[in-house]
Length: 214
Image (cartoon, rainbow, N blue to C red; front, side, top):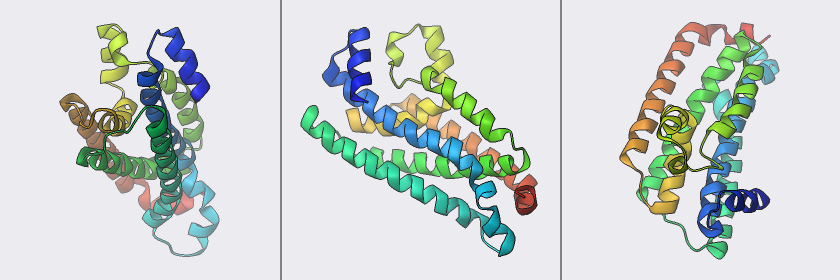
């Protein structure tokens, strides 16, 4: 992570002290997004031995897997915050950070459920997600900053990028202490779409997940 920050700050002519926290926080949040999208899509298939033999709450199965990934993310973020304190100075801590983390966690849980349910029915879903995430990393403002690209590119790769909003609801409060209105609106829209997908997949596939995961 440090090597990448040195490389891109030099390539883009950026101040390392300002760029490193931006990149590091974005990268840490991206890792939990990537893990949730890739590994999260295999929960029901991976847990088939358990869910097929005993009656279990499928939401609880998702929560167990989700909590393990969440714990790793929280530890990584805490270590990063401490490291940044000594490298670049203290970060901001406001109620908006807690709100941003809550929004992120809710979206990750809903996404883990509906992608896992779809993957139990369509086994190519994890591979499709993996390929999409490889491309999405470079199209999401993690190693680059939105204000340094053309307006049309910013609209396409930032305005309609759900990963950007999930990263920014955590990154902005830590860097500036507040969340911009457009980011808050975008995160709300992503949450709404995620909720609609969650409800739709629940209604269509929930009762068949045990049989589809076989």
